[in-house]
Length: 401
Image 1 (cartoon, rainbow, N blue to C red):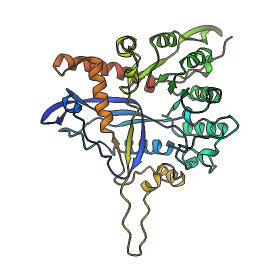
Image 2: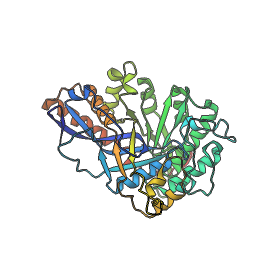
Image 3: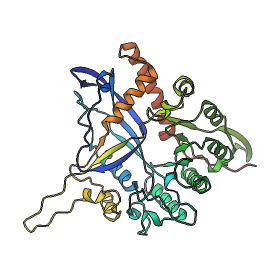
Image 4: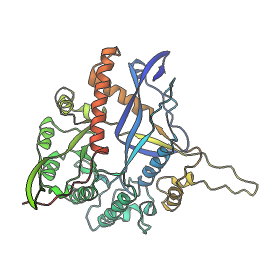
């Protein structure tokens, strides 16, 4: 594959975005390639993505809609990426549903107080009968909604969840809901995508103390900004499980925590010595995933024209706007059809960001030897992706003390 940029023909490399988001728009976002993009030895196109939600009243409906659109192959790259060959790989979008630490209720029995979140309800989209605003959800109801979403979407992961010391309610409020979501993920055998900002000590302690039966099959620390010591310590965690040895005998087996690390240009590479120390370690251990943490676009068709009676025909796609509720969305998904013209568009800036990230990691300039290094990096990242999101299966566990 190749891409055009300033008259040059570039390699077009398939990449997986292991953590991103999606929002709706009526038209293509205006994106202009940067001058730096013209100097890149290759460009990336996203062939698989893990699209994470942050709250049922913020973006869960849009996440679910993006999966339906991707499965219908209504997906393309941003028009700012002038390609000579369209990607041929079938698009694959894995949805994630979770309660982001910014949106955790201040008290488990109280309500969500973050006024920056978009209003609206998506109860019907995930199977709960209520019709409440985001500011009225209790922690108990949020967990009910999450469990319903996991039942409704067998391929979904739990994410984005986590701990954040800089924004959101106190750690004492965030931690119980974080642990509860980890337990739900373990119950349904789903990987988790974890957001952690300046809470690595508490996160490490939580992962160490989490019983085997409550530990998800795989954990991704997205946009990892922790230290090399943290990564090493997390990878040393072992979980004790009781396994059958035959003849009715049980034996205790220690299994390593299956933890992986998402690396982003705008997050990880800004940490001092990350590229020199932490990143080489993650690569050697085959624990690195590439990510953008960007917002891709669910492109909706324009508003319909008025008929002779001055009435606009209703389009399911018009009902998918985030924050407008989930009743029509449920009807739309239940029909297993996609509105004409509704597309999922990869953010051009994020594709450029991935190319910059890979270029920096490999230190390449574009010759064949460098491209071999790049392809090796992508192969290792894809291997980690498969281990986390494809090969992860529920592991029954019995608590040991």
